[in-house]
Image 1 (cartoon, rainbow, N blue to C red):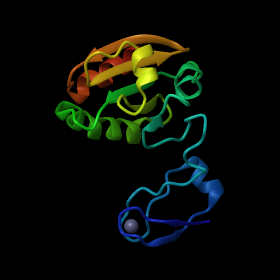
Image 2: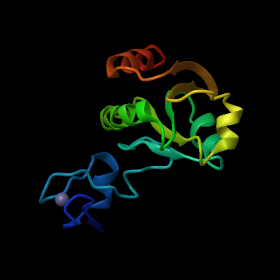
Image 3: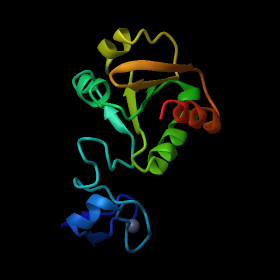
Length: 153
Ligand SMILES: [Zn+2]
């Protein structure tokens, strides 16, 4: 299949079976390419955070199974959220299938935000086996998030 690079717009030929097991990168600039094979529905090879909505929360977070799901609850207007965003992206790239990262825009998905009792953001929640097992409120250094994730892995 042909995948257009999100960074430099180069067209890359990607082998689908290879893309299922390793992250394909752009031949010109080295940026990570997004392919359907890579963003598997089970989250096994997802290298960018899943975007969670009211419609997908149950399936993608509650039914994700034994692998911990780190859910970043954020909003456009929230300054500290913009500091956490890139950390979540890094954690996604480094996950190697050990955990799943996800983002929930609380303004666009008020039903899930209310269900989770989100009153201040950024809020980082960790789910495992369909249960909320940890909750961090406010901006966190990356190492703190890594430690909490590791505790639930
Ligand atoms: Zn490129």
